[in-house]
Structure formats: C-alpha cells, structure tokens
Image (cartoon, rainbow, N blue to C red; front, side, top):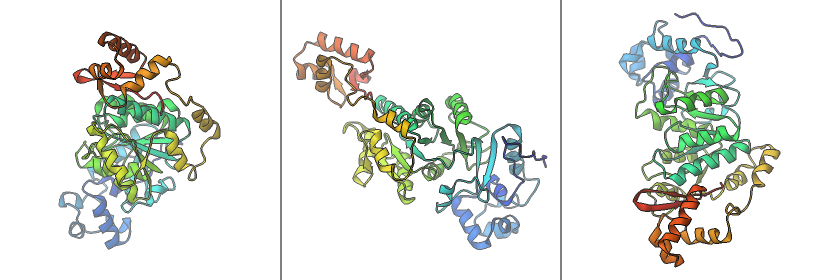
Length: 383
C-alpha cells in the first residue's frame, strides 16, 4: 500500500478509514449505501462484512471483495491521487470539515474528494445552473448574476458543464468570491476537457469536489447523481435557462426536497430554453428579475458583507442610461423577444437602412446580439 503523507496544512491525508474505502469503491450508489448502513449499523461493519453479505445488500459482486481489501486497486488509486499534489483532500462523514449541509440530505455521500480549499464548503453559497446550450442572453445572465452575487459575498456552486455552468463559474471568479464545481467524474480528470483552464482557476481560488473516486470516467448516470450535491451545498438554486428535459430541473426538484430556495429567470415564450424556468415558476419557484430578488430572500439566512452589498445596490437603476433618448426608445420598440429588421421597421416607421445602422451600433456597444436567421436578441446589461 502506498505510504500516507502527514497532514502538512495543505494536504488533508487521512488514513484509509471505512468512509474512504466506501467512497473509493465503485458500485456503491447512495441507495445501496443507505441499505448497507441500515442493515449493518456502521461503515466499519460494512467494510468488514463478508462479500456474500454485501452482495445480498446490493453491492455488485465485482466490487464486494474490494471494500475490506488493503490491496484494492480502487483504494490505491484514491491514495495515489491524494499523495500526488497539494491541496488534495478526502473528507469522510466523520471528518469535522465535512459540509454540514450535506449531512442534512437523505442520501449524503460517504465522503468528498476535494481539490482546493476545504474551508469554504460551509460558506453561504448559491447554485447557478442551466442549459448546456443556452441562448446568448442566457450566457450573459449566468455571468452577470453570478458576478453580482459573488461581489455580494455569496459563493457560487455549479457543475462545470458547458453553457450556463461554465459562465456561472467565470462570473463567480470575476466577482471575487470562491466558486465550487461539483464534478461528475473523478478529480484526476476534467470534463468537459474544454474547461481544463477554468477548473484550474476554480481549484486555485475555490474548490473542485466529487463523490466519485479518482479514475471514474464521465458516465451519463453520474451527472444527475451529482446534482443533489450541487443543491445540497447551497442555500438555494438559481435556474437561468432550462428546457423541459434539462438536468437543471433535477437540481431544482432536489433543492425543493432539501428545503432550499428555488429561483428561476423567466424568458421569452418563444425560447424553448425558457420553458423549464416557466414550469418551475408555475410550480412555486420564485420569479427572479434581478439579483436583488435573490438577496432579499436570502438576507435572513446570511450575513453578507455590507460594503459589498452596498456596492451592488448602488449600480445604476437604468442600464440604458448611457444611451441617448433616441436609442432608448429604439430598444423599447425592439422589445425583449427575438426580432427581425422588418419587425422593427414596422414598429418604428424607420427605413431598413436606418434600423440596420442603429442595430449595428447597439451590437457593437453590447446592447443587442445577432443570431441565426437574421434575428436579433436584446441583451441585459445588468443583473
């Protein structure tokens, strides 16, 4: 067995406790773990149980003999990952640094592998989640809301996925508060690989966390499972954009079951990525038009830095203040749904050339974005 390194203030190297053996062994789902603990009483009793007893409780036969085996390749992979670098930790459920909010879950993970800071996992945080294929406005909202809330002192939790998740993490880093990425793989790899640099930035200022042991590949079933940790670490979940089949709705459902706040940003009735948010609002999620709507709900639960909060609320009330009256009126005529040049011509009685010229200026200044089919989308300049 690889030699364990001592605790040095950077690494948190625990001996192979029962919780680490459970976390390092594949095939033990949250439901299986619950059955094991109910039947056998303690994690130590589970790892010392006979393989046939474990198999009768749902542990796949190919993994049942690995739990109590010091030569288990799964345990060796976990210990090797822990030893290879600084700021790598395993937090078992018996560890004082294990996040208390996760203990409230019906199916808490046996432990968390963490790359980064373990001291932030109890900080007030909000999850920001949404589609992997959002609209341009959805990407802007994810970044701006996360940045705003980060400046107010809230940590941002998300899943490192493409689309809304990635922009939320980027917004958190821009805002200055730590971000936590809950991964659906082992932490010896980054998925998606396009987010390798982003993952490194998160680990240096916040934390990457996973219940999955090192060497776990990106399996489809892992990502819905990790959603309960995204919501579990958070005081609430903000859904930016989501289709009706989006995994973000799983996070929202879990948040509601866990007693967390659920927030949703409404969108155009013509945007399929807004339908999931509209469904959540119909089901009781709080409709959010600005980040202040979220702060108002969470203020009784958290003590935000007053200076950061005052900086946030002192931002201009009118995001179009830097525009002339002519352009402000023009934007109002454009509306908030996707629109074409011909539609704006009909609304304003301007010529096509005049409308195209004004749209070009607004696009260069970041107030509208062009999209497929010659249509434009108005961009929010403020969360």
